[in-house]
Length: 88
Image (cartoon, rainbow, N blue to C red; front, side, top):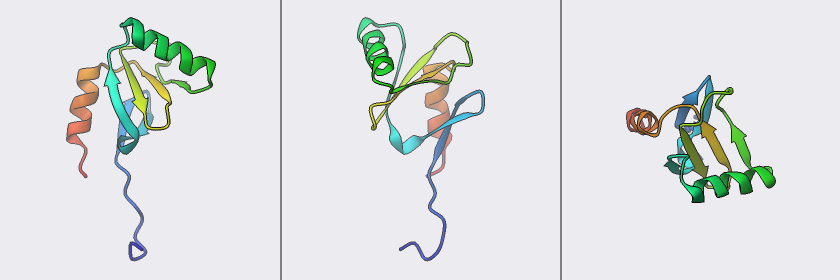
């Protein structure tokens, strides 16, 4: 019980007004390696791919604890900086 207060879930802006819960992120990786391309294809085939790029080039792939693969047009470095700025 949290005393009637709303729970706080830190969120990360991944571009184009799209957000993801920071607590659900397992990894943020570059999109260009063969294993990541295979992971992306598998996620797409299994309905677990979320494309948040708005048609822009994918600069980061976010892997979540629910096995979703999220594509972002924001660079890995920028996303890491944003995560570090989130208050817990």
